[in-house]
Image (cartoon, rainbow, N blue to C red):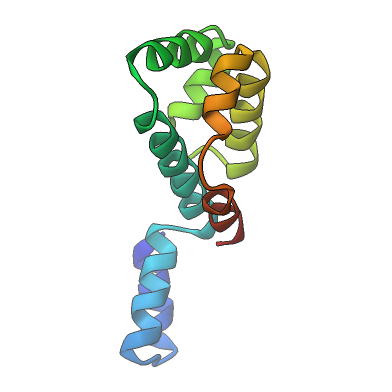
Length: 115
């Protein structure tokens, strides 16, 4: 995928900036970058939890169907599927954990979704 993108760009005689963008997009297509940002968002939320909340979060996570948590852990899961898994986990979480999961700056989630 990367070699083809670079070869096509070189055939088109693009400048260095465009070549860098083509290469980046071949390595990290938009969907994978969005998935990565969702993972980073999840990690940021996890870092704000205390030990008991972290334990509760992992218990809730691994109570999901194995296909769900396996999809969440994959780097190539489409962002829409990853968001659906995150939503299912949130719905299963006890209210005390839900409150903690949504605490913080909601703009950080909006930034993830906009990029």
